[in-house]
Length: 77
Image 1 (cartoon, rainbow, N blue to C red):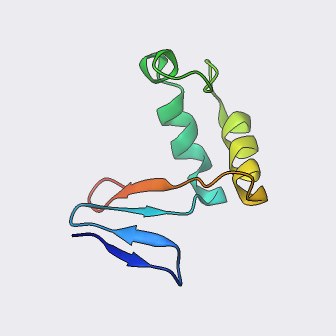
Image 2 (image 1 turned 90 degrees about the vertical axis):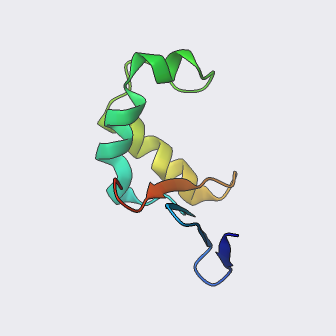
């Protein structure tokens, strides 16, 4: 069963955790979201998706208009 920490707003599970996105996620987000197969399966991710798109999205996450989580795998980040 996942462990939920209200103090840090994250959810811990055996192989991953959900956490708030951070500005330091921009490069990895841009790399992963730029995959055409990812864009094809979504309605809100543009393609191509670059570093600026990632930075803009992460800045939006900071506004608090939507609840957004980053999924972080314990071994793969």
